Length: 223
Image (cartoon, rainbow, N blue to C red; front, top):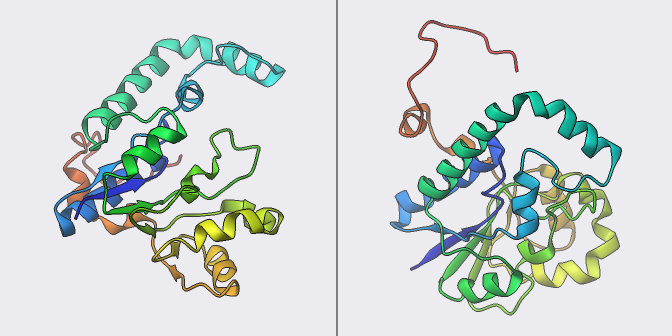
């Protein structure tokens, strides 16, 4: 059985990258294979850029000015994230639009959607898209693992008639937050409350991708 996950894997955010890595690790360990659908539109790529290329708001202009002294460090950070995403994660060929995702999904027997806030359709989130509901004809088994509506759960009713039929196409449902579980159960759907995938691995399994420790003795991290 060929398995893929579909999630926010290419954000320059530690949590986003590690949740994608952890879920893929678990599925590969159990079933022997798993690829991440490499969905990256130009909009997604631009969001990751450390500077706003075409500032439209005063906040974006201020962001550019305050980041300028750290340009070299930010460039190095971008290099590290790209290296992890492209060489540690096991990705499908790049999908740059919705049609690419629909087409490549047909190569898999099962697609696991999530985790992360893939089902958050708040317009203020620049990467939101209903594509993560797999809003196209079903040709494979579909599962969610620890996906999330985020705070948008309170606005679900505004698009329920559009979204609920897509959700009903999934064979198994699980959510990261109790609020999402309750919402779907109230709609008559079976749904489990599960751990974020980053918590499915132990420290030894993360050591496989970690660099040597900078501090050997016990310490407290304030972030």
